[in-house]
Length: 477
Ligand SMILES: Cc1cc2nc3c(=O)[nH]c(=O)nc-3n(C[C@H](O)[C@H](O)[C@H](O)COP(=O)(O)OP(=O)(O)OC[C@H]3O[C@@H](n4cnc5c(N)ncnc54)[C@H](O)[C@@H]3O)c2cc1C
Ligand code: SF4
Image (cartoon, rainbow, N blue to C red; front, side, top):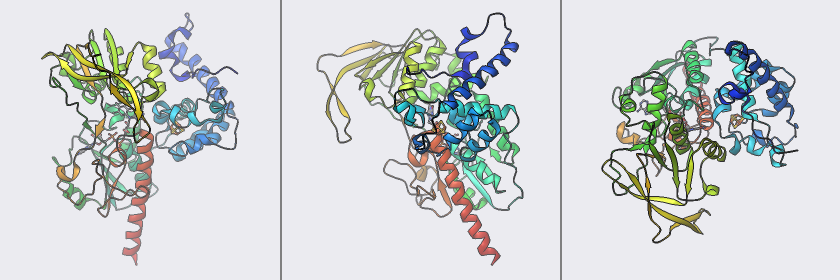
């Protein structure tokens, strides 16, 4: 069988308008589209060989019961498929959209391994949950009875929200504090809307609110409220603040106008899509329209900046990366998407400085791959005398993120951190060096993935429940 190209069947209206029959109006198309999506999901689900060695499941950080929900989907039993899928995943429709499946479930599908093209697990997961929403099967976390204990969660990203959901379902009083105006963390302001539609995220947040989660937005812990106050208010605290300090490039000219941080560029674009006033976008400072764009970095954030620039109408979009394609840290699928959309990857190039007070170009060294380093990866080495200038009107720095110094910012020196600045916590209970204080997601493991933040949040919530149940039992004795 020929290797199949992954069909994004659920995005056909947006991504494949040529599939729309010409005589149909948009409202008619909805029906055809739904039929098409169902047929496609069933077809894909029926390709699962129920192999008995579900590497897909063991390589999903949530250990989703993939073979079972694929079988139920193939049989048209979608509500049951949804029940199984949501039992292990708080936000299946989000993971279905943005997990790097090629590195997780799909990359380990036995059918993929045997060269026949993976079952498109993520797309089916998304389809099942989108259908569940349409049919009203997705219910708010309504507890059977209320408890008096309260938990304060700092950070409304996927880690904090997954924990809030688990705790609220058990009747715990939950308050989520976040310094942004909207909840969702990087789901809302980091990941672009063409990968994750914002209404999908907002729907989940509305539902958590309906389930009784209390959101305190525009509340920067450490500034608007102290960590000590939170500890006095709540029986347990979960730190789910993510990592936001952008890595810098110490190179001549780096302060020039037109050199911007990836997170600022993406946040501006996401805010614009919410209809917010974004003066830095309107002034052109954080807008790629009509510009020559150079993105520095090779991870998924870089891919998002490249693809956003294309959509904003940049005249050219280039990515500088100091290794080659095979050694790119990001998802190969994302690289392929970017290439298909017109991004030019300039492999084996490293920036060594910037030209102009308002940036005009990047001074680039050409590299070659040398001997492997301690990690086994070949180290890039500069090729003498091969420097050149890559023209640019805007340079987007996507070199990764580091944690903020929470013990200093929050005046809690007793909060243990690793040498990378992430919060030290047990990897099962997620309890930190402070009793009753837990951590999850990127602030514990470093910049990672949504699916890992969800897993951590769920595990931390379970450990917090154990803690408050044990305390309640002691009080009752
Ligand atoms: C551009 C980009 C694209 C990405 N794309 C993908 C992808 O396609 N797939 C994928 O799986 N992962 C992706 N990731 C990674 C993923 O978004 C993160 O791993 C995930 O969001 C981490 O979740 P979290 O809950 O730990 O933190 P976050 O999502 O970062 O949320 C943390 C929240 O804490 C709040 N906060 C921080 N400090 C404070 C404070 N002092 N007081 C109050 N609130 C505070 C922040 O405002 C934020 O809302 C991407 C990351 C980036 C940057
Ligand atoms: S959560 Fe992610 S890794 Fe797990 S099955 Fe879904 S798409 Fe695959």
